[in-house]
Length: 182
Image 1: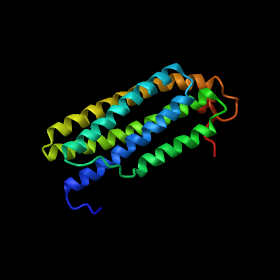
Image 2 (image 1 turned 135 degrees about the horizontal axis):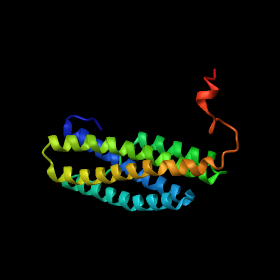
Image 3 (image 1 turned 120 degrees about the vertical axis):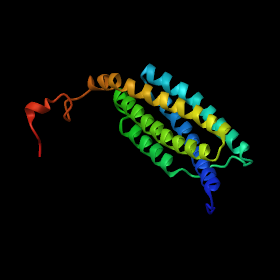
Image 4 (image 1 turned 45 degrees about the vertical axis):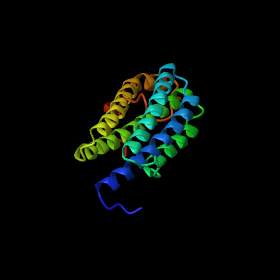
């Protein structure tokens, strides 16, 4: 579809975000099945419910625009999900490390969504679509809150994973004493 004006661009990006939310929902469900940390499990479970609401909000926006909800393949989300799946396989042998991988992948998805929603909000605001702005802001606020919770959980997840360090690699090394490695 050729994009001829701001509304076409907005609808295209809305479809892109609609696809991203659906891809991320599937990815979150997979991450939930692999997460072992109870706090991480709770965060993912809560965000799965929020994501389902985000999808409904996007469908409502399509309806407000007189459009049928239509997914536009979101290559950005596809890449984030694919990278997360790859990392889940590579970390499958150490649950604590896999929990860190899950949190990192979730943070990447959240920040992608935050950037996308901010752009959609700016466009909807310029088009004078107040109800659409409100729905998008609702989604954005939940994405920002989830990103913050993930980031706050990372130190504990990393500490737990450090306990399983096999001594291979550089964690725990004193970098100031060791000096640069080349």
